[in-house]
Picture 1 (cartoon, helix red, strand yellow):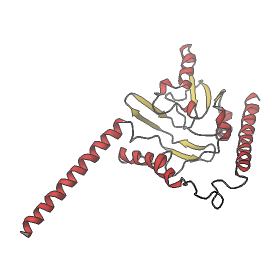
Picture 2: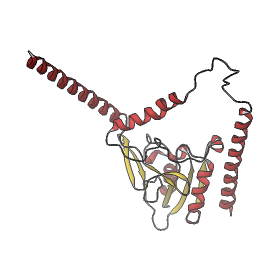
Picture 3: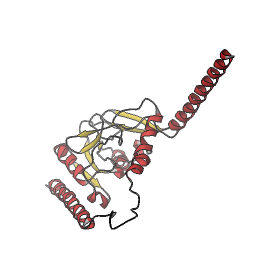
Length: 243
């Protein structure tokens, strides 16, 4: 009787493990079908904040290539002797995302117009998601001596952003062994962590106010200081580019 019960327990345990492995396999397949598992890797640069690691070429979606060259620019074509070197600064608009092929992002499209006329162009796409004008300005100063033209495109909201660096979960610093790892990272970053940081409405606003006195004025001052720092960086880049 004991042996029979033990045998049933072992069979059930094996069955549960097999079902779990099958479920994980299905989820892994689904995550890879969504384009997860091969993220662009980033690091913190001394000049410019977070930057994509050089020498990367990934395909997040079938037929969609994302190439970061040896100098850290998103450029599918390497630099050549005598090429017009155009530095593109900006945020995700300039970067183009990982669902657009290298050939479809606007720096490559613009460079293609000149290439069609017989002019070699090295499109130095330095755009990075979520960055501020001070990040872009540092990147400009780091390579201004080696470029012929600068194209700087940004939404005005970039003037309010803080200096961006690589965090613990976003963007990726290491390549995951499984696509599910990236999926879990995304869930943690977007849903799990904010849920634990959210505060419930206080039942007594007098004893536990949701906002301390003077918070709005302090917040507006922080935004104003941040905007001025970004605008000063933009003015310095414009002056240097004109010079």
